[in-house]
Image 1 (cartoon, rainbow, N blue to C red):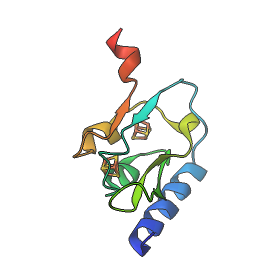
Image 2: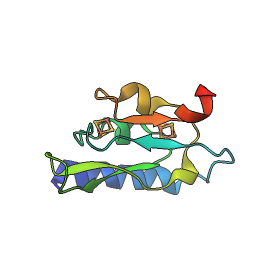
Image 3: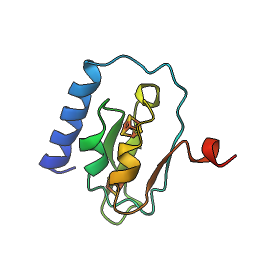
Image 4: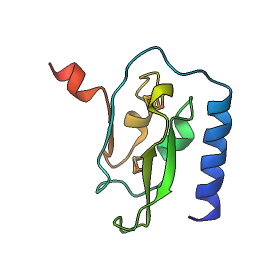
Length: 96
Ligand code: SF4
Ligand code: SF4
């Protein structure tokens, strides 16, 4: 990973260290083939749930990782921020 991606992960882990796991059972679904690893969702997530990770199968070599799903509060900021429709929160739950 490149320096700005490593820094994005450090920031996310720092945010997470100040939070507690959520009491809600939120479901995060990613579509790795759509993800370009831009890190916008990692930056905007208030709880440090998401990180970037190496992904050789992705053409950009980096992809989103739901590293700490227990910390997700279901705010959907990641879903709204993603320009590539690569992350959805509670999609199946709300469809039914
Ligand atoms: S829904 Fe909110 S808390 Fe959950 S991963 Fe997305 S931005 Fe983070
Ligand atoms: S899920 Fe979307 S916002 Fe997050 S890194 Fe991938 S393309 Fe960027």
